[in-house]
Amino acid sequence: MTAGPATDPAIQLRPVSTQSRVMLAALVLGLPLLSLVILPTLGIADPGAVDRTPAWALPGAAAFCVALAVALDWGLRRHRIALDASALEVTTSFYRRRIALGDLRIDQARVADLDERTELRPALKTNGTGLPGFKSGWFRLRNGNKALVATVGGRRALWLPTRLGYDLLLEPVRPQALLDRLRELAAPKPGR
Image (cartoon, rainbow, N blue to C red; front, side, top):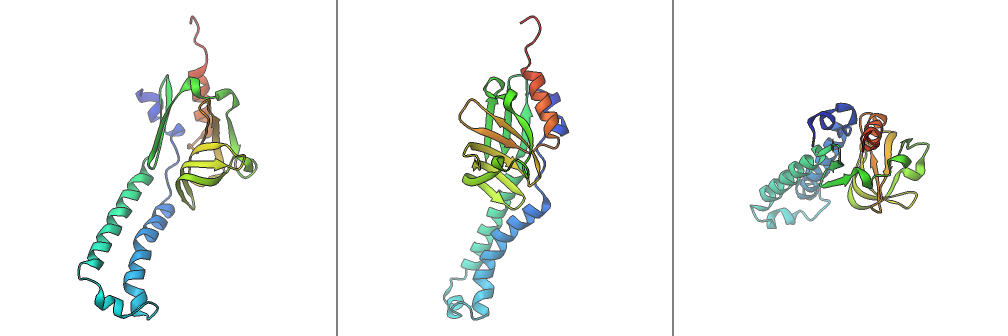
């Protein structure tokens, strides 16, 4: 990857919000600990279950939840685009795809307001991560197309079909800047 376009902040994916990261931590840490500690003491769960629980269970469950939260937060931070003269590479949470520029249908791509173009919104998660304000991985769009999605809840996204049987739905800082850069790289070079 070349240093210039890959480091251009305008074409990078919008970072995941603190709110989404806190929500994930609350789900991964809060709910399990709530069920292990608080529910039995409130009489909602069997109070004798706490007495029958091995001494290592609570610290072990807490350590597992913390490790899981750290791993998932690491995945949320893997949210970027790399671009060079031959390919676009999308990395989002636990997914990475490098697509040759020739496999992108740049002529059909568009910056879309997802509130207006609802057919481009992710509808069904097939293999991905979905939180309020964050979608990453493989989804079916409302139009039925399979798509690799990397969005953080904004209205404007770049919809980019490919020749590989799936679309890309990306939310860079400036979607039009990424589309313009892709068009520039895909344009025929004089003398070739």
